[in-house]
Image (cartoon, rainbow over all chains, first blue to last red; front, side, top):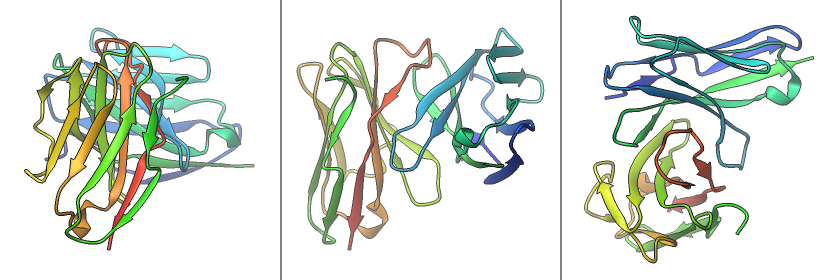
Length: 111
Length: 115
C-alpha cells in the first residue's frame, strides 16, 4: 500500500520556466510533509517542508503548497535552473517520526 | 564525522550469503533511520532508532533482516541468507532528535548486488 504517491516519474522543463512536481497521500494522520532532492550516487538532501497547519511555505525559488482536503501537495520551482535537474522525493510523517517517501519524480531542466 | 558515513559503498555477494552494512551517523544525532531503494522505486522505510532502541521495526521485509545500534552511534543492518530481491541501495540517515524540522541527513548509501 503506497501511502505517498508521485504519479509522474519524470518531468522535463525549459530553463527559466516553472517546474511543478505533484504528490498525493492517503493517510489522513500525516501532519508534516517534506521534499527531498537526490543527485545520482548521493543521498537525498532536504529541500523544504510544510506543516499541516499551513497551506503554503516558500523558500527562495521553492514553494510547497498543501491541499489537505484533496490530500495533495505540490512543489513549485521558479525559475527552474539546469542545476535543479535531479530526482525529487515527496515525504510525509505522522507523530511517530517515521518518514514515508514517494517513488520520486525525475526533473530535467534543459537550456 | 562531518556527515553520515556508510560502508561498504558497494557489495556484491552470492545468493544465500550473509551481509552486514554499517552506518556511522553524525555525531550527537540520536535518531537513525534505514531505508532501501530498489531499482526504479522510491525509498522504502526499514527501521529507525531513537538512541539504541528501535520503536518501529515494521518496515523490515522479513526475519532475515535485523538491525542494531550501539552507543547511540554506529548501526549495523544485517541481511541473512541474501536473495536476489534484496539487491538495492541501502540508505542510512540521522537526525538530531525528533523529526520536527525535516533535517534528516542521508549517507551516500551501500549498493548491494545479490547474484
